[in-house]
Image (cartoon, rainbow, N blue to C red; front, side, top):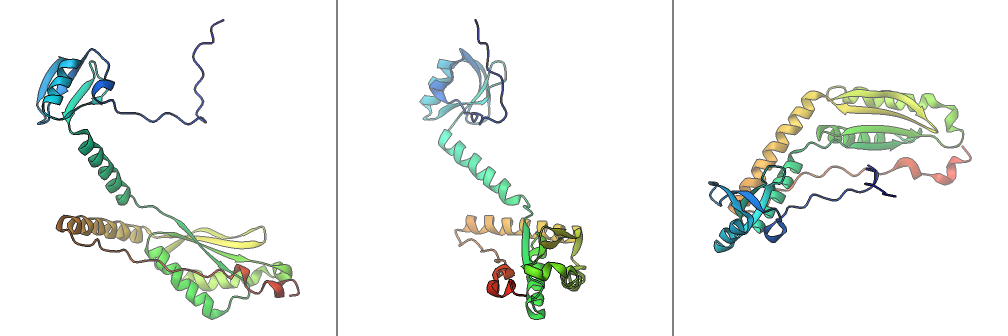
Length: 233
């Protein structure tokens, strides 16, 4: 009984596409582009490989789906380096939005609230969303209005740069609210990122030290403060 081809399972890791180079190209003929970008036409694969070797270069399959496959004569090591560099530059140009969580307690004092609000502003100005979470312990859960009061103090101070994405809501023994940067802030972040990339490329070209990015603040976690006192409150 024939088993046939196994069914495709998307949960299984798929084999990564491998670029065929030199003797790994096993088709009888290929369409060849030389190192200068000139089209040489269809050649027998062994002839195309001979021409590449005569120049101290490689024969690289660049379009395996064409009929016949398209190959280019080039320096494969340099090609891999350039492709990796392009991928890195594309990744740097992406705007990745993270969610930064800032934790509070119903008894967090005004000074700490002001400090954490200032930190939230820096996160938002950097293009990140911010989730404020007020955690309850013991009998604190019977006074959710205290958490609402804290959030009502914080949110208006960020209205100029942020929109409320998810309004205050209870999640188990915590109340949280999610705010996101306004479109104008995201546009500014994108412009700054583009300028940083331009500066980085210029510094790399001139052999200078690459400019460092401003670090974001570290926020202490109020969640573990005064653990021994909570059960008795």
